[in-house]
Image (cartoon, rainbow, N blue to C red; front, side, top):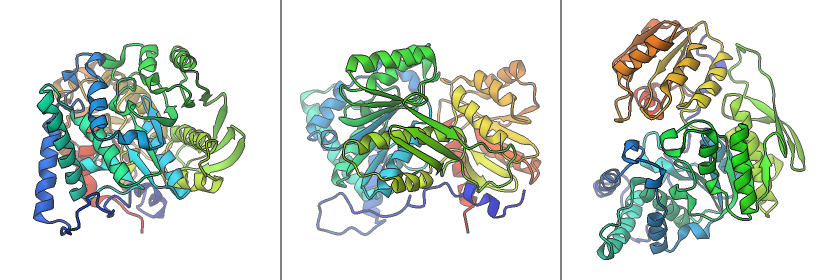
Length: 492
């Protein structure tokens, strides 16, 4: 496959506004030169302070169970800040997969309708401040430093009364997100849960709509071994009187979600029941990669056909339907979200590292799939892509179901290269992956010590007609994107 215009749409996922400027949050009248040494020093100090805190994203083994997560600390911290989360209308999203994509679609739809929208997601890909954007724009470094300095002063004041008060990295991040959205006077905050839902730091909000995208096995050590147990944790975001949009297909998980919704006295709007999504079928190996995925939405009083997505993959049509249903519930509460804005927002929505095409000839894709359900969705997507051979570079975190993911990849990949990401201590070690491969894989497989050597070797081995997919962990995807980012293809 040549690197012609057919690849251009698929090679344009990075947010074009990522490095744009916004008004500083500081009230100071004294201008600071952008990129000044002072700003850079304060920013670096803020990053060091944040990442020195207990960080379950990097060390999930530090939590022995879900009981290690508490809401008391974040409640106390936000109360000391004047409860900024209580001043903003919110859409709150939980789920095992798809919540980041759905959150981005909801945000882009509201932006297309003319609203100022804060989007809180995690983890970040390149820089910490990607976690809280306003209309797709990250805060300046000086703004991040201002937020941290203010927050740190509040923490220290509380610690004078209670030395045991020690907010975690994610609690600090969540508070900074709410502070930034308040400073920026957003009309709507779209908030993605970090882990679980019931005891997640984001669950201190007053949502207008809650969303549960899907339930599958993930974080089982903390959330539970059964889908019903995981569903009960995710459904902990459901609030009394607040409508909930769901896509929970497993019967036991659905019963758990419905029980909590009934207890809270809320209406459920379920994909496949109250509203429906009909994807437009694409032929396997369709040569035109610029042809976006499309779907029809029916239910909740509307019948909209041929809705176009900016993200690839048939599974994204389901996320798109959840986003449409969410915006319809907002519209019922007085938000002006016309069909034109819905169509534009869905088309504009992009998420980094979700089937992100970094290079063509060969087609090189990076994806954050990291549990069995998301790997299955990824395999269905790459199976439809035109390629002579499909090579997968795989690494996984220790707390994920690596064996199950490898079994699924084995059915789609022509060859699998196993590696170990280097940017996080959670990686499954190579000798463990080798043992898994010997038990599971029937396709050819190889070992490479690092993502850098795996990518270099795979690109040397592959022909222009092949496909290389790097997946299995957010940390692997982010590391690969960093290694490859300087040469990422861009539309002309």
